[in-house]
Length: 370
Image (cartoon, rainbow, N blue to C red; front, top):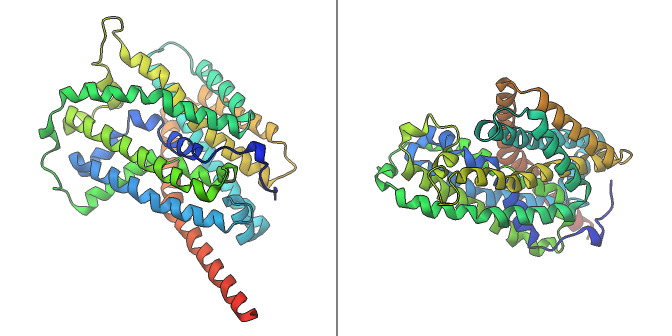
């Protein structure tokens, strides 16, 4: 197993805010409203808020798991707890999950470009651009990745001010009546909204690269709270803009709202919004790619990370440029929804319980020896 991270590869604690927030706010911001409204309807914002707040508990569990791992990450925790072979298989399964999640973000953004902007341009051209940028960023190391995550949060944040313009078109009555749904309906919306928050679980891999990890935890919680606030605000603005019946037939509700914004010098503001969103999805893709490469590197030390990254990039390019059928897109979406939900709300709590048991056993042994 790899030794401790070198000092010159680490980043300041506050970068954890940008890494976590930047890994969660991706392509989902543009199309999540229709999914979550299928359960609790106009009350789905309650489910979004509940899921967002619950992730702070999941993050606390993640910190406890990494605290009791030999190298401070989930990779070493797997091998420490389950042994070399079973731990290696679990690491490979996690690598596959990261790869598929990053691939879904890349594939969805290419689909967005073809639907809204460049209808006649083939997928392989967009895939080549994203793959080259991703390879450059990931191969540059974790500090480059953290810098891109910083700008991926700062630059598009100005676009979120457009929600203030949309607020003039609000219809508060669309939110009424409040709290008139059952527990089952809230759970359906919560399950659908959980997909939006995927990404911060990669902290299980890169957390050793954060200086003074114990002091950086507050930045992680701030990042989760900021993501929750963003999604709740966008949900409320959307629900006051569209009726629930209209939302059912919209694929990209956020962009549909943005279309009404126009300036004397710029008629199609949504084009600027889409192109700027490249700064948002790039950190997400790169964080997933870097985490997958890092996991493989520590699991199989003899493999060169450059070759592993090149292989993953080739897989991304092949999938995004050749497998364009909607069947494969739905397959990716279903895979991420089920795997991500189980990983966050099932597997991480399980590892947390195992880590607690390890601490109890260790303390009992120390007491019996003393």
